[in-house]
Amino acid sequence: MRILITGAAGFLGRMLSARLAAEGALGGVPISGLTLMDVVAPEPVAGLPCDCVTADLATAAYAPHDVVVHLAAVVSSEAEADLEKGLAVNLDGTRRLLDATRGWGRAPVVLFASSVAVFSCAANEVITDATEPKPRSSYGAQKLMGEVLVRDLSRRGVIRGRTLRFPTIAVRPGRPNKAASSFASSILREPLKGEAAVLPVPETTRLHLMSPAAAVEAMLRALVLEQEALEGETTITLPGLSVSVAEMLAGLEDAAPGARALVRAERDAGVEAIVASWPGGIAAPRAERLGFAADADFATLLARSRAHL
Image (tube, rainbow, N blue to C red):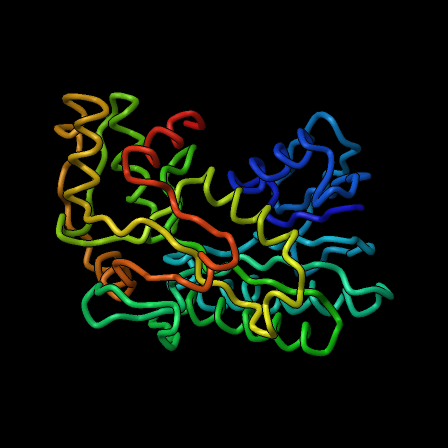
């Protein structure tokens, strides 16, 4: 089995590739090698033959693979600020990758990373996985279009697709990026390192969260699902923790006394408008029936995340 991961230089791509290399198999089938692709040079992982490819989705050449994990994306605030770039990567790039699979002669398993940004809320309320997606951001709209394409190509037998709608992932390692949700990590990550952080939204804002470790577990679970278990619906809204920013800051203080004082409120109307349109929590009974699970509680999420900072 050979596996292609796009966006492999990102933190989830790195974590997933390291986990696959450590285990050496997926669903009991040995992994013969990994192809790691990104616009910046991915780093090889030890334990498996590994091809590292620096390429843009618009120009990349795709050899046949048995499994594709499509993580590459232009994130929320950047996609909102630059419509053409968001469309080129999130829509055109996804279509180009999926089109390539049509010439492979077999239907690969394709995991597409989507987001709860496909949903919209009037005021950050709690919804269910049965809520109709009505994105209010270009990023959410582009992800929803990708979901539909994965579903249709699966119906046609071109791929064996599965889409995961990820919660906001926290705590992300590294530095803040251009995602509107970036603050959800920075208000925890930086204070844990003794550094200041900016909070651009009210403390009453609720977020639907998942740790990076839980996100990797979800991807591994999705990759070994039997296609029949999806019953034609390839999109899975993942469970997560519904917590307010105030609860997150209280958990930060419990984990590291004095760290809360390093977080400074500085409202950002643009970020606030995007985040307020996202659900503050999602009930996901279908995903739970399929074996997906959220982090047990916020203290667990924070503890699992600190190992990767």
